[in-house]
Length: 224
Ligand code: AP5
Image (cartoon, rainbow, N blue to C red; front, side):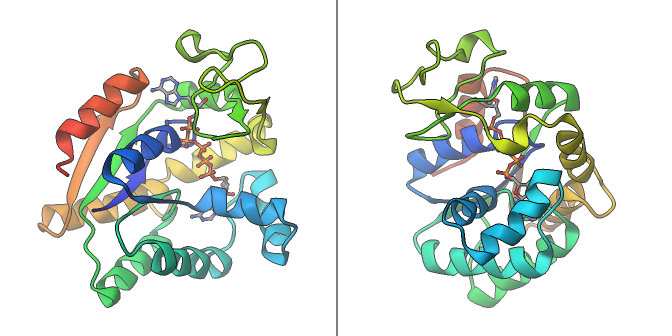
């Protein structure tokens, strides 16, 4: 099974993506996480990407598109969930071309819908567990408050992401997401059009509810 997941930054695409990955045994390919690994390892790509990520801007397509498509070829042979890519209309078209060339199906496209203010709050309260960054921990949300300064799931140490505390950078990330002309919603609607032609299936969920409710709705709409 191959799935693409869209949602504004902070909508829970990483959280739901991680649950879907486990359920269907998929390779979880997250463009943001690939960049963060490069940054941690001090690679040239990581140094370039950091300049853009810290400002809340997209890393240029010349770097991002080949990086993600290569990872998809390497790790996605037995099913994948792609999270964070595509983020603009150019990336969407390149992905669709690459899938067709490789003879790969796109089974589902998921769109998590969420109001911008709620998404911003979730980003600023997010805390990342050293053992699994998708363990839900958020200092502003009672249901998933950390245990003191430790992960509520496994007790691991928690940290914040450097691009999560800068409100101007978060606003920029959201401007790109909600742009229906050339931004990420334009990319999502490109696939919605393909779904209307019967070339994939498009699933929309309301991301304002709790994690378990959203997960159950997604599982009821996605057939394994
Ligand atoms: P990336 O890592 O993709 O970050 P992002 O898009 O900003 O997404 P987030 O991880 O912030 O949000 P999420 O929706 O996954 O939310 P989460 O599940 O954690 O990208 C980082 C940067 O890399 C980009 O800014 C860009 O510069 C660059 N980049 C990446 N891809 C690129 C591309 N294709 N092209 C160019 N540049 C690219 O949830 C958020 C919080 O809410 C957590 O605390 C969570 O526990 C909580 N939560 C989740 N669901 C719920 C719920 N239902 N109820 C209550 N709380 C919830």
